[in-house]
Length: 257
Image (cartoon, rainbow, N blue to C red; front, side):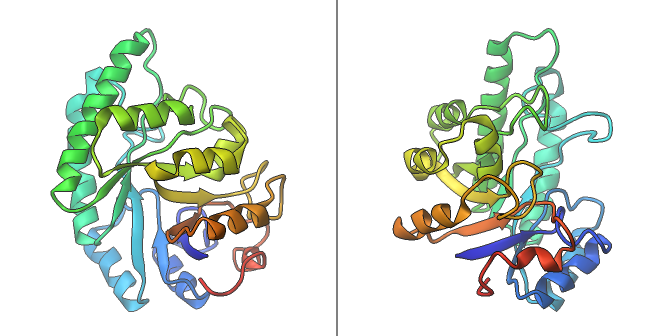
């Protein structure tokens, strides 16, 4: 297994730009993060190069996070804001040589019909996919459970797969987070196998608590064995909140990341 460490959730004991060195010292070669936009891309480029790291994944800007936004893609009143977020995400993605960008759907706008919101979402995703494809970047969408994020529009794996099929672009893929899928559906291995052809990235955390594997109910040993048996070659994103120190949270894994 090859791992990508999420610097938005791990090594939070130190400021963001110092987490890159922490990742290198822990033996990682690949990193990802949620929102790098508090720092100019040149500054992030510098710490990536200093630590010989590859940045695999970022998210598009989600709107006003502190104000409750969890993405802009489903709101027909905010299409221009969404397009601006795509441009900003691309600026960072291209500069940092990112291969994948996740687009958060957003909270279902109050009082709007599901049909209208869904159509807006597909139109916005199609726009983003076309823009990202010009730079060889994959667009990811991810079902997120509504226990952690009430009102989130894309909260069903099967609906996400339908939307990807409707868009029909090869650079639109599924971000399969075992934590969220466990909380939404369960049947982790069966669902992964069913949609493996559409999956562009994996993330992991245990349930409940969203801590490292081995702290909850998910039997990750079985999952990793299944991935290996199926010949999975991609990266596994560690998007968990460490229980204990970040350094101590890696005891579950082999040191071959």
